[in-house]
Image (cartoon, rainbow, N blue to C red; front, side, top):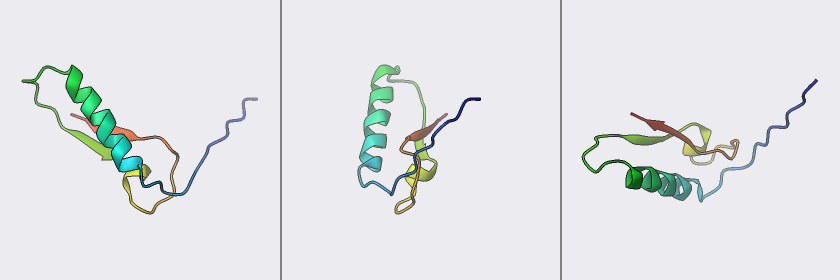
Length: 60
């Protein structure tokens, strides 16, 4: 049997900046003429909400 531990932590003020950094990294490797939208989704995108400390992205 495999037991997984899931960490949930209080909201961290640096999550929006972590998202912005990931977004910038992704955009920097895509062709400049490629039209994409990148959104911060999931519980880390909600100010004040406890969450698993994983930045979720939606790219389309």
